[in-house]
Image (tube, rainbow, N blue to C red; front, side, top):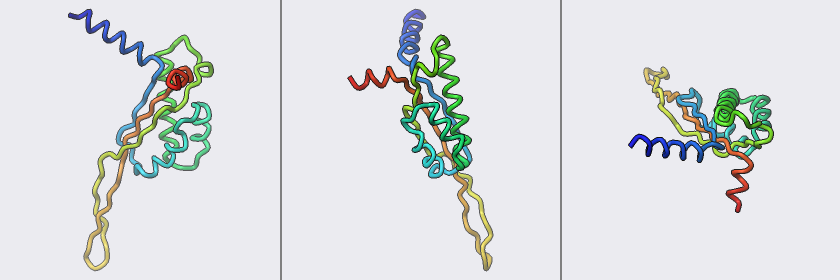
Length: 138
């Protein structure tokens, strides 16, 4: 019974060898602001995406740059003998979902109070390779 699971695990590992992913949970920035930066790097080559994020003035770009570097490190861990430049890594998918909201109260005039929603988000990023892109086109 153990061998069936091991074979299944090896098949899954081989199928996801070219795919590397990284997740960022409960990032304290609104999902709308994060999506603006995420849309810029979606489908872009990794080196170009890093350059875009490094010189972008949005606060969310710092968090996404760190996430992209983590995904690259995850890809290198899976493919230790391969070279990043030759693999042609690109940002395959990047999704930004809303996370928990911290609800706070701000004082307002005449004894009233206004609700402040401090939003946060979850970001998941998946890298792909050029070979994978060519095989999908066929």
